Image 1 (cartoon, rainbow, N blue to C red):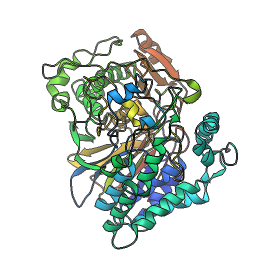
Image 2: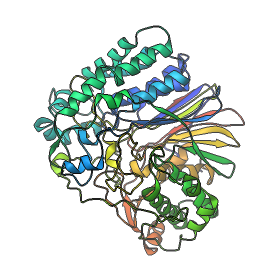
Image 3: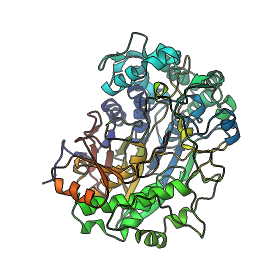
Image 4: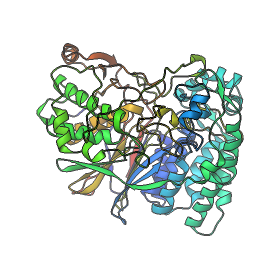
Length: 588
């Protein structure tokens, strides 16, 4: 019998899963009122900015992967904004920095999420902007129950807000440190949403959306961003630096529409974003596991965990060496995803845990791991959010997936613009993201910082097809862990036969073997985090094989969300992770 903490939600009308119950309920309301999956996802996305401000915001980014039943093509909308034109290796070094700080305005890229959400709404939705924003405006203006984790984060950064980021203090400490469960309001953010609606005006959906995009990227928001970045602000280096973003950087931004990368796995095929994300590591892991057949090992046995972990180490090592924005560098993605390359790499998987970072040689070229400077991190100006996951349920990202009765399905993973990452922009109620910390200053590395270039992000939504029909959308917060937790969910579901909810509820694991994408980019070779398991013999065997096993608390790793359509019956399903006690699935 499969263990589940809650029922698998099923229906025929529509289903939603997101990392917050209010976002899920709002998305479901959109479906009930005639909107499609894309309208619902956009409404949920804006609500998540309000109710999980420590995990995402209007100044952040979002990759989206979707199947529109009228277009019949899997599409990626890239909401990862690029680096400012002033962001060069020379400029960063001239500021006395050996790496890009993990907090503060110097790490900001162009806010890409609004462009991506409105591109999704314009090209695939059916609702007007004012209608999808109605929910977020309400929660920002009237208040929403503050999550305990958000309250804890605000309390942690209270000294930083009061001493340095006074615009943040004005929003989050106006009445003292807020308590968990109290109604938190953000009047400035509500006013920003309302002004976007006002400037959109009337005159047809597409025209309204284009006006709102101009207001944000060429109007009042862009102007406020430039003023904001001109003033130095404290960051994790322990010094105040000005930001590099200018209004002109926002003015030239458009969310890109791209084809997905796809790898088949038995009757399934998984589609991911390109190598400007870490998404291809999921596909590389599938290629590695394809030749070993994980179905031949017992679920969550030592053999299973060892095999998946060792393949993850190889795939993520390639991420470190080869991935970057393909608009700027040549990424040998075809060979990295080839069966021949996977066969050569698979031979490296042994009986013992590897303690080395081993990227592969591709196209006769040697891999290059980034040369990083020693980054000073001042604890009093740095909360640690975004660092490698260590068993805590807190994650700096959110997720929403939606499927509707028309055959549409979409997965979105918003992040960035965290309240603890950068000071609030005065009058706008939100802060900028810090995704540029994922760049390096190695002039010979594919992920080096360059003007107008996208950083190689960790954000990684997934869309899977069975027998050629897109039918499973899923994702999770978790930084570097995203394409480990989602892979394990996928294997549990499609290889080991667990339904979606049971696959989420099963004990989870991940490795911290490779460098973190987040400053200060720590690595822990051989470290393997495993949720508490009743079978201690599995943990002893993993330790015998050389893994540095760290046992995490029960229900501590991952915040998965997923929706699906059964291609035979048409039945829709949704599941949400119980970890963190706030993700929610709904449908009928």
